[in-house]
Every structure is written in structure tokens, then in C-alpha cells.
Image 1 (spheres, one colour):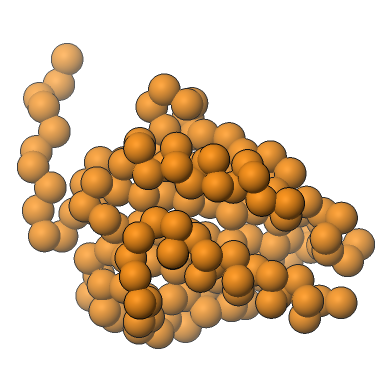
Image 2 (image 1 turned 120 degrees about the horizontal axis):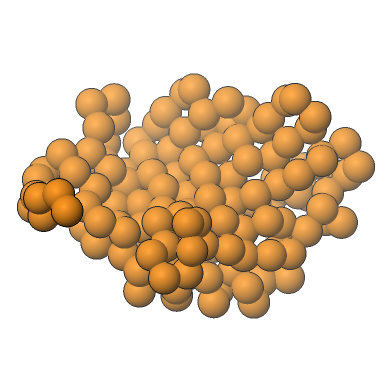
Length: 145
């Protein structure tokens, strides 16, 4: 058995927030755009919540769509949207974590997450951040049709 984990510092996201991940799992499971939700590695020690979105909402050229959610006890998070078209990906990400490239809260813009901009959210409550991300997903789906 190794040493206990050290206290998270100012440059650490900290351990996963299981309670918030479970809250977001219930929210995602109730969303009509979501086909399936699952924890990685498992529901007992979740580190990642993955939502597979319903492909029927997308044109045939989109072969898979998912939303990967990480939430930490420090309030840091990552919500990563990934659309696949064969070997090609269209993705974006809402983040709150320590970094050297932008403000703690920032957005990795589509199509490749390469451009990063500061993000000003009116609330960092998990359900409000979820709503921000899903509004963008719904706009994306409308733009594809």
C-alpha cells in the first residue's frame, strides 16, 4: 500500500467529486439527447462520467457523439464534447482548473480545442455549468441540419 494522497495544492484539481458526478449522472440520464450514461472505471469509484448522445439527433455523417464529464472536490471541472465522423473529430471543452494558458475558467473552442478563451460563467453550480454546455450542444445540433 502506497502513501496517502497529498493535500491538493493551488495547482491541483483534487480528487473526483462523487456526489456531483452522481448528480450530473441523474441529470444526463433524464435528458432526451442522451442515449446512455456510464461511470469510468465504475460507479463505486467514479473518475469520469461519460454520456453517449443519441445519434438519431445527428445527420448520418456523425458516427458517434459523447460528453465526458470530470468534476473535482475543489470545484474544478471539465466537460468535453466530442463528435466523431470516421477518423475526424469536432470537439470543444468547458474547463475550470489551474493552468498557465488562460483564466482558471476557460473554453477550448471547436473544432479541435486548440484555441482557448477565458469563460465568464454567471454560476459555477454543476447544474448551471451543465445547462451552459447543453445549450451549446443543442445549438450545434441545430447547425448541423
